[in-house]
Image (cartoon, rainbow, N blue to C red; front, side, top):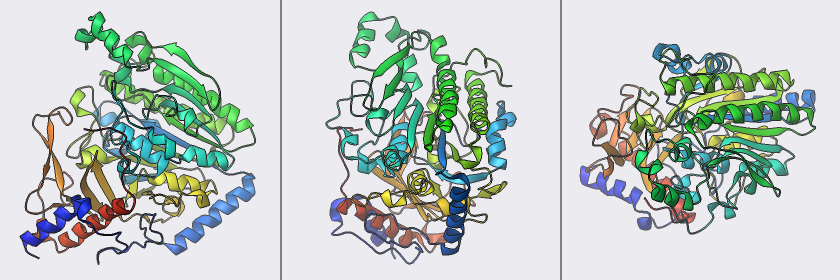
Length: 530
């Protein structure tokens, strides 16, 4: 194929209007099978699926109730921050608890998030790409959205609640603070945490970093009139919502994660004593900028920097939450997943994490979307496993439904981008059921990872070091897509292109097929422009 024809094919990928109909077929490169128009094609591993179901059935027979599900989501932690991923003590912040879970469970080295917070948090709860839900970026102070994106979405906690689960979110939400968009409005039984990201709360009290706001009463009042929350909130489905603690200083903000951790530990005791299984998403405020060390952890990292102290704090709390599950006697019946919502926010350097890859938070480069992923389940996941097979955090949606014995509740009236990865995670020698990861930046289809290859049709260009958000542009790639072999070039520095890879056109065709799903199932617009 010549370059002119290749470029035309790539342009078709990005221009949805040029796609005449829904594409059921994949390229010759694909081994995935599509069983439904509304489901992402998946690889089929029948033997491991069968063996996994036997394990789950045996566990249910032994325990007498469905497994608990606990997600531990760190905010803006870099791929290279935990010791198990090359960081830890080597970079001034030891992470013994995450490292232990990785060594006693399954460490995923090709787990993918969305580029920023809100897109990831919505995607894992819906199994859908943000372009489909409209939650393509964080809802910021002053934004006027045109519709409630949750009004017609079907969330994981809603489905698990219908399956008999108690559902709780503790910590950061960041997917809408208006009534109808709060965690306890969209399916969670209970919420104890913060609607906003840490910086969005602390910026109104930190006069050292934001003097032009904090020391200007008129502008501070403007911010407050936007309705941004500045409190730790406690809310119940169909019941009362109240402010528990007002964040009136950076010292109070520093204790936010301690407060939500204490809630989660006590809630685990309560839930474990009940008759129903539970789903707990504990979402840390840290290590999102701006970081302020909790009093008990100030200077506890070897680095002594606030970010590193907060990594140590988060790791300690992960240890406490797992210990609480053990003390409550439910650890063997609990699926635990530890991850980060995106890559590190280097714009706030040195208040930032580490990734060995190119780019950072908000980028389609590996540094923005490749995150730690640790699956731990005592007695169910073979200790010491490691896999570079693909896992998208959206897969937690489908996988959690399967684990809960509720796979039949997976919606069929909308496109589901997540894939059931239960057999990958639980089989002793499990292989991933995911063949491709698609990477979007807001409304732009940017790239696709397939096998060890990654193809970019648009790229994020930095115009100053560290400024991966505040000083970047998105550009088309030009004559041909940029194709990288991540096994020989994990930093995405030198495209192998059509001259060194025979499958460039096939991968472009895969992206075209993906884009075609948006013809059949159009994206949702809630008024969040760039």
